[in-house]
Image (cartoon, rainbow, N blue to C red):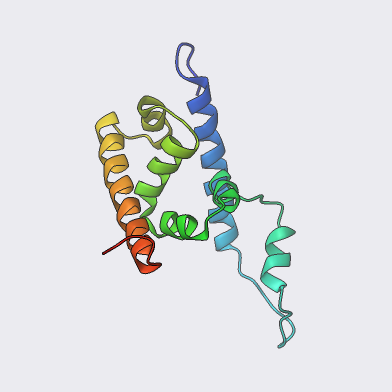
Length: 136
């Protein structure tokens, strides 16, 4: 419930996240039945596209990232770190706004951001070394 004087942007974002999570959970509970033994190649893609549930904002942002290595490194982060990093560094939310969206204290946001950024930095550094772009 929105209270005057609080952050409208964070409140709306929280509603968006909760709506997506609820739709995702509902979809997971619905069994998928297949009549035919042979499933077409794009069955899952077509099924999800026709479900009416659009991709999350997180997915859309990751899809727009130009470097697949950055995308893979972000996806490999634990969700609690990935959400903090995406909300701060991609979406541009303040620590206070992120705390409201995730429902955690600001100190937890700061900790998750630090750990998430460190893990992301380590993963990307390893990828750069693997490609031979820097000396080991």
